[in-house]
Image (cartoon, rainbow, N blue to C red; front, side):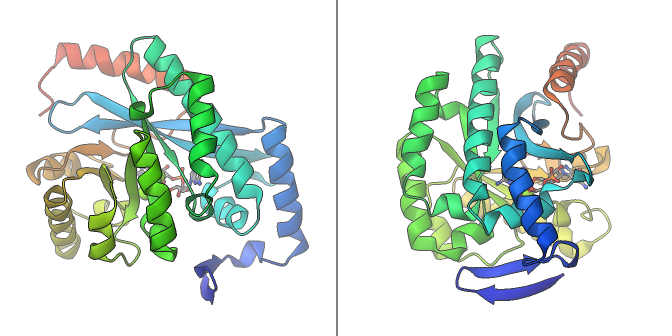
Length: 287
Ligand code: C2E
Ligand code: MG
Ligand code: MG
Ligand code: MG
């Protein structure tokens, strides 16, 4: 990996899909087609309340099974889509899908908070709030059921412009989350100004929290910082019971990670919810 500075901030170039390579251009036009042809899928990963052990919500994560290249990780194609207008199509598609899924769950009496990831460009698009309002109206969701995840680095790319969009989304009733916290450089002054609901601690800190004294200190301090700013804290990358228990002792609010489930298809997620609810009825005390 190599970082390069552009007018938009730092970008990461992957050697396998170089920015100007024909392969990358082909891949991006294929991505547009994949969106239109419904070849992308959203998987869902559960988020669990640490105190109660109850299901809190789910994060939607995109999956692309390419006919020739096989599985391509979103970490690879999202940054590419970000540098082209393809991201706008992908975000629109993801918002429509997740809002509809959220409406479905709520119609079934399942009051999940559904998280969806936004990209840097989305946060700078003055049309985004109206687009979101349109999708909310057509799917019948209550904005308070949705959590919009924005990364720390995308906010800091252009904080003033992002703040404006974030403010509008907040006034519309959406919950807002700052994702990948700890991996970028955020100014606490801006963080304080943003009407956020949730802070997500990046999995790079969480996964080593048992081995690394430094990471434990960072995780603990971040939880306190977030609580002092009035934010709920989600830890991502929770891979074991020991990490779960440690986070609980740190007063973390929500856990997400392979310990509960990887991101899975909607059918698998519905089944997972049934099993989780049954297990909770048998053993209501999570610890
Ligand atoms: P993210 O939003 O920070 O999502 C969390 C990532 O951590 C996901 O990777 C998830 O599968 C992974 N993860 C969760 N728990 C664990 C764990 O216990 N262990 C490990 N090793 N990993 C865990 P994924 O699905 O590959 O997505 C990578 C990134 O791609 C996301 O990071 C997000 O930034 C981006 N992305 C994914 N879907 C979308 C989308 O629909 N729109 C946009 N704009 N970005 C997306
Ligand atoms: Mg996320
Ligand atoms: Mg994250
Ligand atoms: Mg991430």
